[in-house]
Image (cartoon, rainbow, N blue to C red; front, side, top):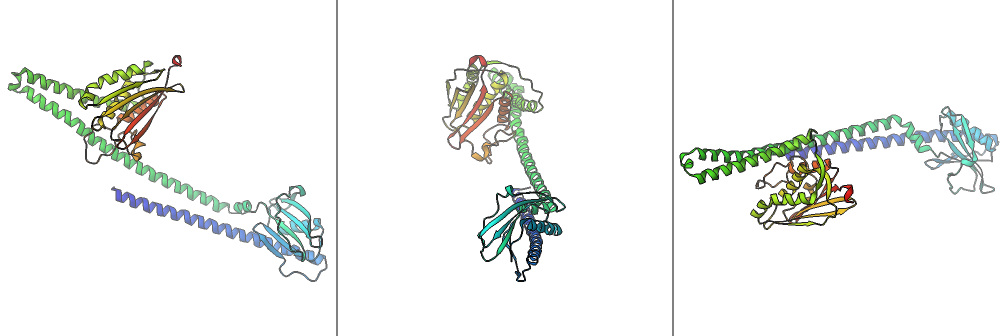
Length: 432
């Protein structure tokens, strides 16, 4: 599957997911509006009936044609031709709300146009059957304060929990929406897994190709040197024997190092690695690794500087694995160096930690690759140039070892300027 196909799949998937989300939001909105409209219609019918009953009770023939006004989504006012007893009004409201299946709490207020003030407020709670279960004037704390006309007496009804009530009425729609979003999230997760597996497959393919190349070179060199050793002209020349033997030895060591690197990662993944932890003088470890890599550094005209300023540098760890960690970091600094490379190794202490920095002035690592370089088999893309040897296992191994020592490793890099690897390890208590 090429990159163009992947982009097409991503675009189509994004359009489908966007369409599903948009459609679901549209239907939820429509369902809410429809449910709210039904509720408002029932409230209007109930309040009109209450107004007509009050007008008949007051024996007022000048009834209002359209007495109910919806001032706000949750607030209704009703014009009446005369005042009414608050208890009588409450009983009428409860009866009519029960009749029209309006079973949620409400607040009501009674307005006297002669006094130009609200003369009564109360809060009423209903049960599922529409019967009153509680009333309290003290709970009326959020009744809307709209300016009322002085032309007639009125009463207002406010539903403080209308939004949640409408949402409950849409129970099936809400559950179906949640279900759709779960399916969408699952679909997105599957896409992420597929693309991750594709990337891992590509990385492993690159690793196998690279491993084949890395093994083929020393094997071919050993094979050619062995053939030369078997020639009669070589057998009579001690210098040639010595030269070819040294080549065979060097390439065998190189092969062993490559195999060991792969095996170390395999052992770490299988969780069978046992660490032989003991107190380690990390400054001495750094000096030992520097000495071992010194010949290679001189071949590349590399300047290695040690700035070992930590006051507490004894840690508890496995000396073999931590030596490999430092060797890998310094080896990377050499591999990805430019002309006249420079490596600086620093140590310092902070909050009971030993901080070790390996800085180089190499080619650097692009920002988008920095979060990937600690993954197994990953190597920073260099196009068709394969002048840097390796399997992409070194930094994966480094991170696993540091984490196994309850430490952490950070990266700071700028392309064309250089890279700093920063290791944090706990120091021994006696050094604090």
